[in-house]
Length: 225
Image (tube, rainbow, N blue to C red):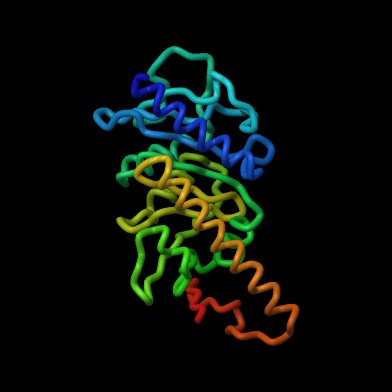
C-alpha cells in the first residue's frame, strides 16, 4: 500500500466514525490529513459530499495553499483555507471540523469572552495534561462569511499549546499529530462541552446555583471541584 493510499484510508475511517455519530449534518464539516511536509500536501474533503457514504471521490489532494495538485473535477471544501493555516502553524498531521449542537452552544455562550478554559476535568488528560490543576483553553472566533477573513481569524488565535478553535455558532476545528490523536482530541472536547451544558442545565433546574452568575465561568474559565 502506498503512502497516499494509507493516508486516504486513515482519513476515510475517521470520517466514517464521525459520520456514524451524526457529526456531519447536512453535508457540513470537513476533514483532512497531511501526506507530505516538503512541500505540504494533504487530502481534504470534497465539497458537498454526503459524508455518511464512502466513495472514491470523498477527498482530493491539495497543496499548502489549498489548490489541487492533480487534475480533478472535484472542488475542495470551502473551508480548506482553515486547514492550510493549521498545517502552516502547527505540527498537525490531521485536522477535523464538525458541527454539533453542544459545540455551537458553547461557542455562543462564551463567544463574547473569546475563549473557554476547562480545569480539573479528567478528560483534559487526553491532551497530555496531567497536572492536578492543569487546564486547557479553546479560543472562539466570530463566524465571518468571508472565508479568507475566517481563516485569518483562526490563524490569529492559534498558539503553541492550542489544540482546537471554536467558530461561533458554526463548529469546532481540532487537530492532532495523526488521525488517531485528532479524533481523540475531538472526542475529549465534545465530552467536555456536553458535560458542561448538562451541568449548567441541571444547576438551573435545581435553582441551587453552585457557580457564579455566568455558569461557573469568569473570563471564559471554568473551575469545577
